[in-house]
Amino acid sequence: MIKSLQVTLAAVSCAALLFSACRHAPTKATAAGSAGSRPEDPNMPVAKYNDVTVTLKDLDATLAPQLKQLEKQKWELRQQGLEQMVVEALVKVEAAKVGQTDEQWVQAQLDARLPPPSDAEIQNLWDESKDKVPPGATLDAMRPQIIGFLRKEKSREVSRALFGELKEKAHYQPLLKAPRAQVAAVGPSRGPEDAEVTIVEFADFECPFCGKAEASVSQVMEKYAGRVRLVFRHFPLSFHANAAKAAEASMCANEQGKFWEMHKVLFANRTELTVDHLKKYAATVGLDVPRFSKCLDGNKMEEIVEKDIREGGEAGVLGTPVFFINDKVLQGAQPAGEFEKIIDAELKKAE
Image 1: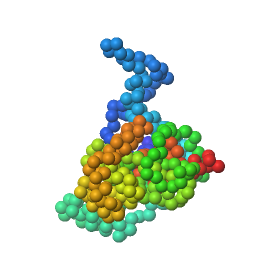
Image 2: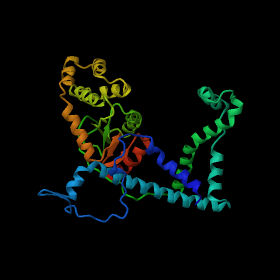
Image 3: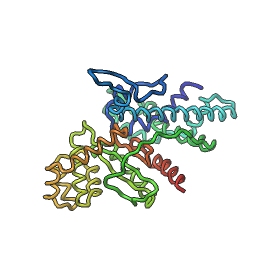
Image 4: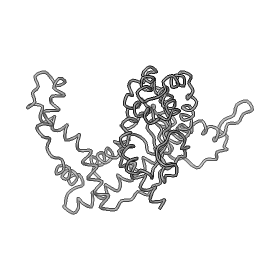
């Protein structure tokens, strides 16, 4: 298979994961490979000091989040590799039908599906970028580069649609089982407690990707009303200065039955989450402000937030947002369709 086609496939399959979450920097534990590993005895000694013997089980308990993340990364790598393998095979079949190479066939399909940028699109990009171009450059001189940039921006979406059609036509069904992680569905919730599907969300009110994910979550909750329950849990990241206090504020609002109203305001104002701002928002959502202030200033909800962080870490959460959909993991600000794939599969199993 021609290398450029492989690059296109890899870019399409990986793009959603690369730019959809607030993440901690990877640690050595999450970056390390496991090639050639064999089943290991959890009681195997790995170190001794004084009269203490450290077992593999003891060590792994301290690395639970990183090891769970490794398991998920392994599944994602296999899933992406499987999809690339299948699409390459499907492309080869289609290209052979018309006597083209694989790369020629894909390029012909993309050319047919990628209309030339309109004059308005070209003008808009020029207007936005003309202060960054070399002195003396003109729109006419830069037109080829602008067209190339605009086509490249659209090509990923078009490629995704093309490969999706090939898989649908071939009745592609990935059978790799996604790793599951059990987390307690405790916290503010929406939807019936006996819903067939429960989504546990770990999020950070300062994280832009968490805010972006809200649109998808809202679509899902509307589409599956009565069949899906959403539980919100907190995972404020250490490099977001006001996220932990914002999490506490939402739980102080929850104490007065206004969690979701405060949740909406916090995500809408994620860059302004100082304590003074939080108290102002309390008034706008109709809270008893003195009671709210006493709760917030007294750190009344700190333990709840810390418990969420601890249990999220034990389940493998390293960045936000992360969704556990009946214990299936979906990471990042994904489109509603990605939620729907998992939810539909879970609902089908429940029939």
